[in-house]
Image (cartoon, rainbow, N blue to C red; front, top):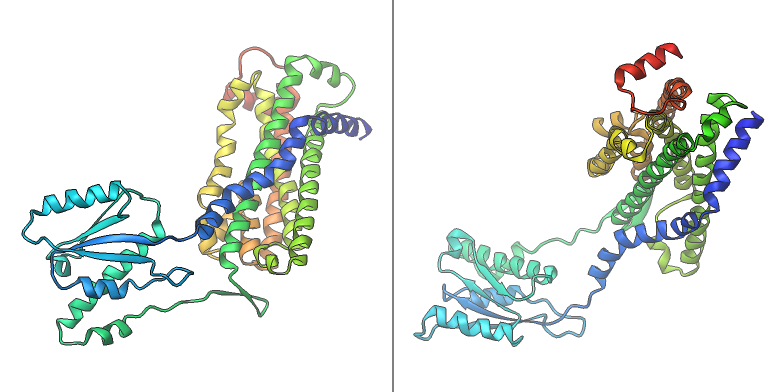
Length: 419
């Protein structure tokens, strides 16, 4: 046990003393949060500007209804959209469009819309503009034009347009999240964002520190250090020492992140209104660490198998793909789990050791599953760690002393039988 701890200490200090560890610890959560939150935040905070739109109305009757439907205003109270009806006046339609195109190029107009005569039947119109980034404005234009067309269709059945506008007026649905009977306002998007940040951190750290175990084994093999170490301790102690040392470095990183999170949370609480933008609790952080530890122990045994078999990083990159794919699959299916966290798919996925560290944590953060499911998932993970630990120890015992050509599957199975 003492020798195992010495190996763990060596692996731990070797990593935490590197500048890359400090940089990754500080920039990791900051970068991840920025990549996820900043685009949406900038999108929401971007000030809206007035849009000058020309309308070529081939129907001859839709412009007024369209203008009334597009009654959005800016914060200053000014109209968001200034519409100008363009009539042909005997001119060729292509000449009119060419003239409007020049106005768009010179920024006199933000764009123009061509409404065909058959829009009521076909439901299609065309917008011509120079900038394609103002999604909010285009959505409002499309919605207003749709309402105007629907109003015209219904008015053809003898109904008054103003009555129709009132009848088709939309509803502003406010989403409130219930947690233990308590209403929490506007948290659905926050739950999604924080959950996504957490599972990305789990994915990156499980992969990063698992690969670190693999590379540590390969490095010691190439330097022939492994032979010296095995002369004074058992192969199982060496493997577990490496896993515990690298895992300890990961836990240190998480402890620092947890400290940052606590400071951020306290700061947000002190700022009052900012607290609504923070969605995690001590329970979330506890489960985060639990599933990191279990996930790391499970995946590190798999990566140690690859490190024992391979002699170079190039060989290892080819063999580690089957190990990485389950982690990638968790990210690909995260939206399905988010939409139905207590469904059959999410429940089954959270019980399989390859997916449990990410999927079960995601379920816990979205909608707390029954305690027995969490306990069963953890039990399956521990069982998977035990089984994979035995297999990896047997392969490690033989593989770390093998050099030269990389063994094939039949030879690895032969190692298992010999061990």
